[in-house]
Image (cartoon, rainbow, N blue to C red):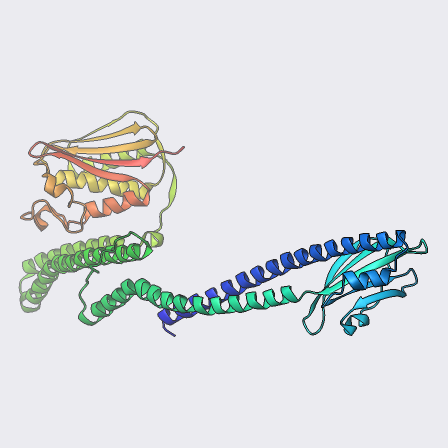
Length: 452
């Protein structure tokens, strides 16, 4: 069953149930009010008849004759019942009223009853003093013909009104389904088009009101745009990765072919080829490890966090890089103890990446500083090289992006270092940014939450 049909059926069923419930409530409320009104009317007649009977007894007048002359109901009965539940006198034109059981009571009572033939009757009982001084019951019973006719008419009106209400309800359900499903049909059509053509396309439809359907369209368009950007980055990533791997593979293949031809006759070439193959193999291994780190989801990475002194970890990393590179790195700190909940090895790797990046693009000394900034720890690495233009500052954390594209492997980089640094910072719920003045200096700032 189509969604439009389901909406129409659901709307029709809901309306039928609602109308049926409403009609039932209206019918019963009207029935109750009408019954109370009819009972009050019969009670008024009973009081009048009671006064008439009492007056006749006081004046020694024949009660039955007076009642017959003054009150002869067409659809009712007047009956006097003694304490033995025996009928003293009865006045009625309908003999079937005599079938109702007699009941003596010395209290004012009133009720309504419905027979198996759906006929409504009102019964009113009034105690009066009889001729012999005893208390008898004056019973007034009457069939509520007017009420029955009114209830039948009300039932007919409610049924007709319900049937008439279903027609616009069905048309409204059809129209509502068409309005609601139009953007959904557009969404389905666009999805099928994407599947057939393989090209990502958005839905160019703007509704007058920003309702849930417009939110659905906006969400779909945002998803498509994000997928488009991700696919473009993926294509660029694959292209760059292929380019990065092609060169070492070419070198290895070249030296392997050279060894195959002259390796046995030229020992000096053998050493050169082995060294080159080893170097390029190491580079490929590092590149593969970096790529694996970048493509892994955060939940699949092992992060061994512990409370560590950021000052000590960064300082040791700086000393290690100074010894390995023989470069001048100036370290300073605002405090001796700045604790953060972090992975020590990842923090070391982050420091190495930032220092290595600074060494590539600067021949001068490098400044490293660890300071407390509110509830955070800030690590800054400043180099005094050519700097980074504002247009490039938004791209330097992308994979394989190099500021100086003319510097390729000679600089020792693959363009993955800052992308890895960004991911390491993200794993620690921190931030990383860059501030640079072209041809003067560049400062990378890492902010990590301090241990509370």
